[in-house]
Image (tube, rainbow, N blue to C red; front, side, top):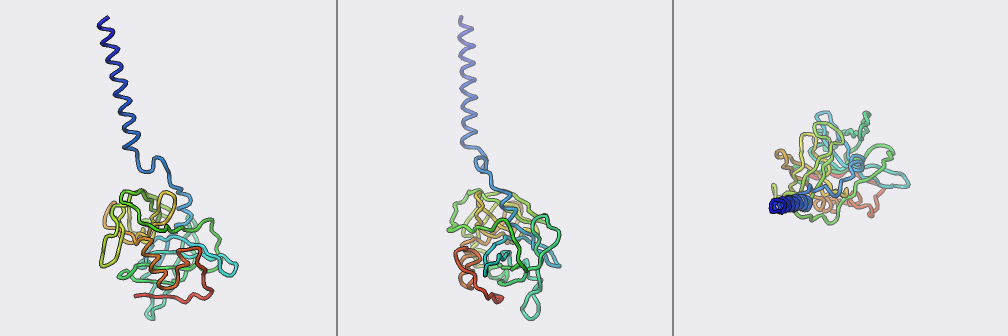
Length: 252
């Protein structure tokens, strides 16, 4: 009888211990995206590769209606199109590759700020292009450290590459400019690619990769401020009307 009671007690103890382990693992150690997977198809539909004769970068697309026609614009990092700048300050044509499309589309630089300032550029695709989605920029985007994020871009020229990370630090000052730090993987070709929340809102553009899991982004709050200051707020806010005439804007 005593042996039976000891065995029964042992089994109960093992059961309770296993139950405790399962409950603990399920509630505190689950991966950041375990309960909510980002819509990678949507992200891949709004992310593009930007190409020049000297290399490639990444970008995100914005669709707007102008005079009843759909126009497509691309946000990217300013240094991605640096090599396109001519001696007179104008830019030669960039090439934008959508998804697995092999034929690049020509795009004109319509707003630019160098890497020493905002490191941002806005391109406009030539002709009417119809896409299935458009980038949604978060507002406001003061997200806490530890927030899961997703990066989609073209590292080393590989289109539509997606990887995960978290916000590591906010409001880090680099050369007098506010940057947010994220742990997504960035490589040559990632510059200009969007970083998103798990529900697909863009929180900024990746512009600097310091090492594996250590990248810096121009946060959306900075993009909005710059866009507003030069009259292209419509490129981040769909509620703002796009002017019919858009002269190129170059900020050193």
